Image (tube, rainbow, N blue to C red; front, side, top):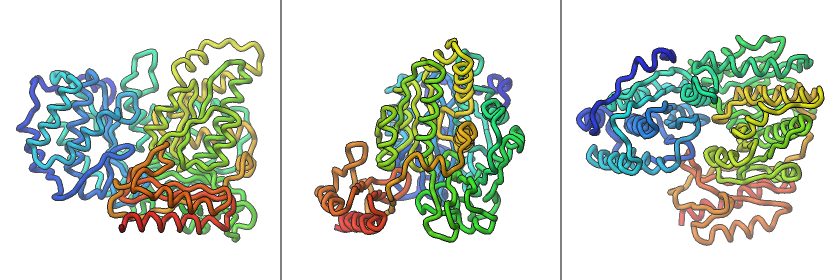
Length: 559
């Protein structure tokens, strides 16, 4: 990766006030769009089979360079990853200048650009984009890009690099990175040397910032038991092994499993956060690693932006011994702890929590008794924006993707507060260090892992005590393969269907037959399917509800 000192010296900006059509057209020949393939910008970018994405990566690299120019040359990120998806999939996630998701108003241009049938149509889209945002093409462009461990990533990175070269952009090849690390690097670079400096804009800076804050937060607190981490055989294994160099085992003992980055077909296969969350079961064959009752375990997903915890309660041989501590439980733990620290510190912070329709009904009830709760459509870009309306916004999807945002006003209050008692001073110090252990740009499995460890260590809790915050309602999620997921549209934060017409009424009739039940249907933002979520008061009725709603969805698709 280019060092910060070498970045400005490495700039190769275009001096023309015209789009370099000739250079871009060469890329169209080198990276042709697959015939008949339609691309769609989802919750964080475009994701599909890796062997069909070269044209998309090339075109979004050009869009990324224009985004940088539109922001007066600020650094923009491009991450090649498909997160929790199977290994043959891949994707590309644009990262905006503050380390957040790409401005939503640019998404339609991305979709149109990736579906353009020829260079002339693509040029027309670029011209519209340049006109709409009054982009000065003479402004230098800076783009950093990274990738996860998928076999298709090197091929796609070449397409990204070619698109950036065609635009004369200054580039930083960050290499193998977790998605949260690339978000961190974008934000850290763009704030370097300012009052809002986020951290040293290097991979080492990322590790040091999180590790230093963690060690301060757990200082003097008795160590808890060893943590077992399923790295999903993905890039999270690389990051976890590296951060352990900065956190001694005496402070946190970690047993890293599923670290086979170079094994073909291993990524997310029978392991990882999505496998554990959806199946509500241990990673495949983890029993062979000596898992025992009460062990504290967690799983990352393939690009390490999600995490879920779990443990075994009672006899491990029993089916119901598996206990999941997902994003809802993390949100409850963090919200309680931060609210408690603010009260002890004697400062007024408007702490709120943001969830989606996938949040377990028990978690929503628990949180609403303590803080304001907002429900948004699925996708971290929606939760992130909603969380920004609080002084401290805790947001987590049930799948384990989430973080905590401290507003500028909250950061100012924390820095200027003058505690009146030793207890208040200690709480204030804890809050200040929490800010640094949390990756506030995006959900981050490693950052969230450390946050949970800090809270459990502070409370001297094990997983069972954490789990006891509330009892989840039995729930299940199914995927239904449909002819056209776009035919399924929603409203009310994706909790109710608008189309196909009449389907929601049929779902309501089914749900009414079960005790304390709810179910909703939404098209996936990352896969070619429709997702069905079901929740009931009685575990014995769960499968019946989920299967009946899924049947209705399939019938509507086939009609």
